[in-house]
Image 1 (tube, one colour):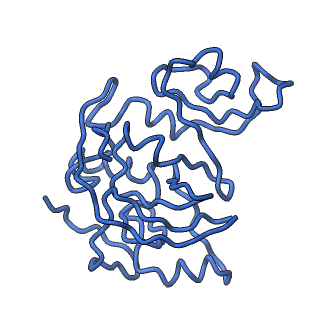
Image 2: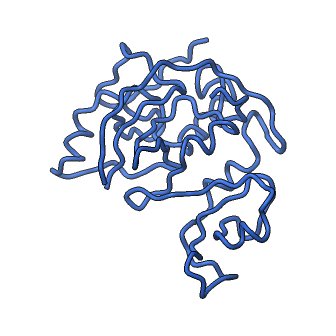
Length: 217
């Protein structure tokens, strides 16, 4: 898998609006998305070639929450559906599929096959003497929740970590202005990639064990 570093552009204006089923700026479907297990064989289409459950609907509470290509065609044709992808055995989603319905400011993005993606949940920190572990040890940036090393000046390694911060400090805390909320629409190991959504200022470097600083206005 080709990987290239992309520098983070400037943060865009944050815009958030309350969504259906949201509480404290958090969409009702977000926790279900983060807690769903994907990439299993679909029980409704066991003999079909494209039966891996890598789809999630944000318009209805489908049971099961993860479904396949055929379920989408039959039951969710007119719904907003997010496709989950994988990178190094971890679930990712393309930025273009969620940036209009979710505030992703402050979450590290990566470039996979020319598409910007972000991870759904926290991942284990690389350890040992390999290249990934070396990069992690040398990184001046860290996720403010799990401490995972980041390659660019962002605050969180995943949507899951940003959600934890939002719950701990409220809607205003996760980005300084907006939480993991419904957006107004402005908005191998994966390679680091820039995002227009809430990168840290370049001068703010973090070294050693991360310590949470007071959130600015």
